Length: 93
Length: 157
Image (cartoon, rainbow over all chains, first blue to last red; front, top):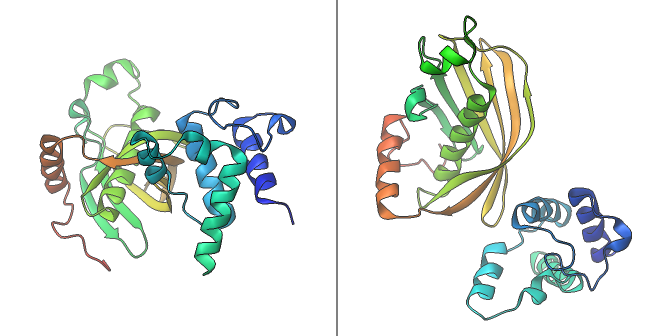
């Protein structure tokens, strides 16, 4: 079974036509991979479907805008993977 | 349809929140300046306006799901296919279903048919946002009334 990161990386590679090898756990989806907000909607849709969750993009955006969080917390892929694991765990709880 | 006002939907004929589906009807006007250019001597409903009809129908569905607290803005069109010419006078059926309700966005599948023959279909991505201002919400209420959007969206309608 592939890891959460592998699943995300494969989704990003396919959705945004980014070479899979260039997508690392330390990659920042926006700053390093150049994914814009519209492309991220496609990624969010694919992640929602793959994991059976609903990424709280609006809440995350609000937290970043309010200075309560940094984009690194949600958009560095290893952190995004951790957030997804938390959402999956919360769903099963 | 009132093409000059970009009103592509005449009437909502069915809205089922439990099924997350909507059906609308729209009759292509017999005359419009659009047909003078598209095309001279061969009037055709432009495909981009058919997409807009699907987007507006999808938008009403999203508005209903969000209890008229938020509205939808077209963000992406995928896999759009146009299977048949649409000419003045055609009475169209426009259908949309909500495929996914994400955080701040929605995905719909929409289609248009004429006499049960498929005309076009597409997958649409819509950003779901608060109404930009009170006036727009008020005007959207007016538009909703015009197209027969139910005053009270039925929970299980």
